[in-house]
Image (cartoon, rainbow, N blue to C red; front, side, top):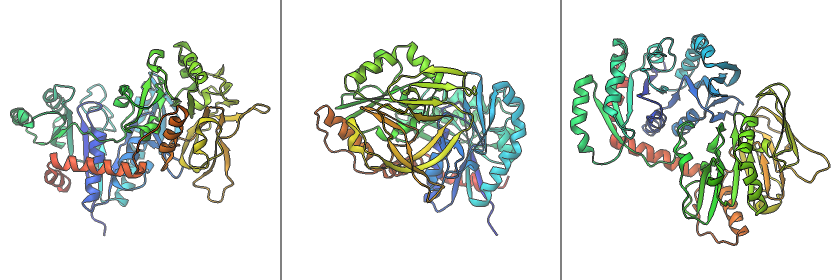
Length: 509
């Protein structure tokens, strides 16, 4: 008979308190200690999504946490994903499939109907894993949203989970955060909080000792850890990421990602970061663009609106100038669509109508309501221009887009990759993407992730400008991520009372 699955829930005093990273770290620790853990978040709001091997869509954060736990990501770990389409509405994805687009008010009225789906997913996880680490969202003390809550204390009550409350000292006022959150909870909700964590601390911890003693007395809840500001390279949630504010450093190569207003899946570029001779940064204006060696147009939740933004703020013209000076232009997903001749939206997937593209690739895109969601593998074809060195290299990743892009006949241009869908063994490879001169476009997210591609890309860019790179990191991106998960776990172990955490999970409620 299978032993009862143990659970613990990580809630925060605010968004970006560090919940996702704490969950990932706990999953890694539990794995190292011989357990079979899984992450769970009933509802996530993010533009960074992940496609499972079954072709289903889930939040990227839970995929990262699953990776830390050493297991395959599953939509059971994130049954509801909200992908904002504008300031007041989101695409609602349930169990990996698009349910539809709703305004915030309509979803708030509807979400209670999704409780059975949440519980079904959680119960299926319980059958497969012996430890479940649950992540909340935002704060449990949003008194205007507490009614019909399905992601914080409402969920903790449904699955009978003890709670660890995380406060962010880096933004200041951590004791007020913790005390205020506890004060605004109902009596039964307060009883669920078994411990508090002060996160992102910098400096001499002894300075905090008196404050820790006082907050424990005020709340009656123990502080089970003071966790330092962790220097680990692990993917973050998209809304408040520090990556967008990376400063330009002295380096041989300068790669710029255009920070579109509705940028999505920016984790495509994490593999290009943290190489000493390469500067990867984000630009949202002409003066931030500078004179880079490569410009990347990333994915976006609203291609037409972001293309208009690019045009209106002058970045489109600046990219044209950069291209004429020899800069490599690379588009992924929505960025690929922008590089074409025309974008049409006959089904009103976005705003409807048709718009002229940037015209750098001989392709045309028609947006459709049918959403492509597949994991793919393949290789680069023979590439022209600066990135010829990548020709023949193996690639892997996933496609997630609403649209069909076709190359215009009679114009110079060629496919960029040859891919197969991983769930269809024996399938004849499809030609994908388009390239011409030093302009490249693809639908494949994660196209730089496979071993050796980042190094080949950097070498190609350096050769183009007559520069020489020194020794680059040898380990693969996958190996590098494993070291970061271990570093995260080691740091948490050193600053968290894991014996207390285990007692919380074992305690009968």
